[in-house]
Length: 394
Ligand SMILES: Cc1cc2nc3c(=O)[nH]c(=O)nc-3n(C[C@H](O)[C@H](O)[C@H](O)COP(=O)(O)O)c2cc1C
Image (cartoon, rainbow, N blue to C red):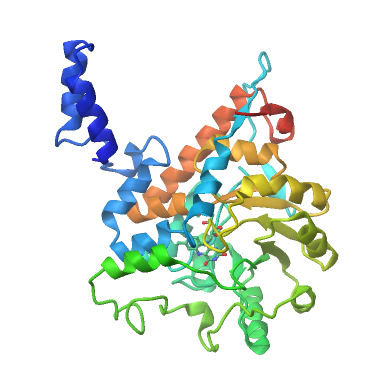
């Protein structure tokens, strides 16, 4: 059991002001039969229940790779914390008997605005990796963005989903490799290419490295040169494999746009200035993201960056958001600040780690139910009804 929870229940059990029945109950909870350990995905009541479940099953290095951020992990924390400073202002006596969570992105109907963010190397979390995530996305009808450093290829995931995923791009440093990779993704039928911009300048990940040092396993089976990031990445088969050119500019976006019929979204735009430039240079959409606090230590939560991006976009392109989303109210707040769609990374990876497909499905199910309930509680039964008028500084 989580030490804080155990200490809390021990305190209750020892309290003289509580009724004996409550003390007995607290005593039971503080002892060995831990009610907080999930036995199945269905046991989870909130998304955060999966975090501890994932920590228990993952080896130190893989937990560290997923759970950590860059530098002092403060941007990672800021993403989550910032939502807690935004309150909600409910309206009463609105007919909320028929809530409708659906929306349209690039003309396609989404049942809910929730999407699955690209997360690399998912076989580090579960044997079935991206295949389990894709089966969950299909079963629950959510758009999945496949990472470019996935352990299954875009063709394999397209076949599992029954439709090609949106595909994230880590641009190769060699332009000819970019051409080959983009053509491969286009040939697989992906409608949207999501170019991730926030790692072009590199990153510093000491926490991840510290966790890796605790891991004493022999990693050569999966990592070509022992522990580290050198895993087999099928999307880079036949390519040199070096990615994220630090000399990329807005002209690179124009070249990319000319090369493909796919919509090109930019992931990692966090300012009004870059939003304007992105649109001028042809971006079809924007994801406000800081890589889940895994890129630069900016201390700026994505939910705090969202308003200036939405304002600068002026409705010309869809603006999506990810980072720190842990419950349905968080999704609601992002929608109220103008996000057209809201993504999750770690939450579904916790579910995947602990229970495979069933875990991912339960995370999606919980978030959808919480969003629906929040919409009803706020008197905003459709997405069009949601606006910043329903928000208050907490
Ligand atoms: C373990 C891990 C791996 C990730 N891999 C990628 C990736 O390959 N490509 C990418 O664009 N973003 C990647 N991300 C960032 C996510 O797409 C997303 O921006 C972030 O996880 C959202 O924040 P959250 O984890 O708080 O939900 C990764 C995130 C994590 C936690």
